Image 1: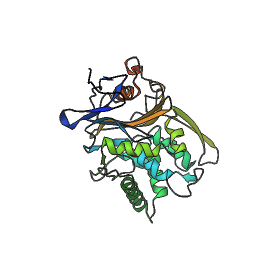
Image 2: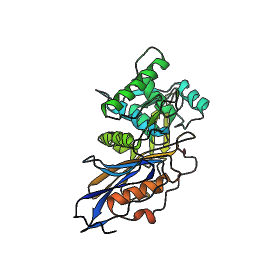
Image 3: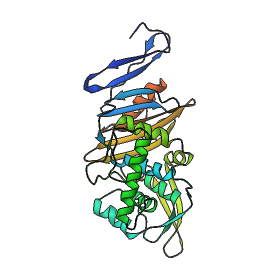
Length: 308
């Protein structure tokens, strides 16, 4: 479509349902067609400049399921004086919690000693709610587990405020709402993704398709944990570097994603989309001016891997 505009400018097109697509003009005066996605909400930004690259219902509040854990990890990683090698003893309460909630798990064993770094892998790859509980219990303050996790959640909300995530609220450390006040918007969640990617530890963890981690078992011997990343874009979409999946009945399938090509990194969010991986690829193709989404073949998760 010839828009009669000069190169290097952008055009904003108003769509129905409050969607706005920001289209980078290609070549001399040609605009790439903005992709249509089935997501209820979507957003993409350039992590370097913060520029909006794609937007659909960007400021509509929606549940985010386990993509909540991006903030869980961020609060931990932003802790002053953090020791990633500090060992945490796994409590039976963490295992009981995932059984009670029917939640995704990293199958941490009671009495095992695992490091903070390992808990980050366990939280972000298999989406372990037991691992997220362990982090919240460790990095929150208070005399009881309930008090500590409540304090940790308050830190999540404080971090959201500091990042100018104006339409986000956390009432959970793992995405399982406790008071129906666990929500975000595509724009807000993209701001968080941009911030989280500044951490080299975070980047290393979320780009891992799988990991094997040795921990000290409760009997003093060594135990090896194997965790697989639930993000099917890794190894499927060229340049994909993360970030986190999430699925629940109230939220639908969600995805926080990022990729780097030719030195340009983009990060985005899709909320409530049964085709989240394919649509994320389409949005990133739009930013990278490529068409790899059409031929992309999604990775199949290994048998026994968690689904999220």
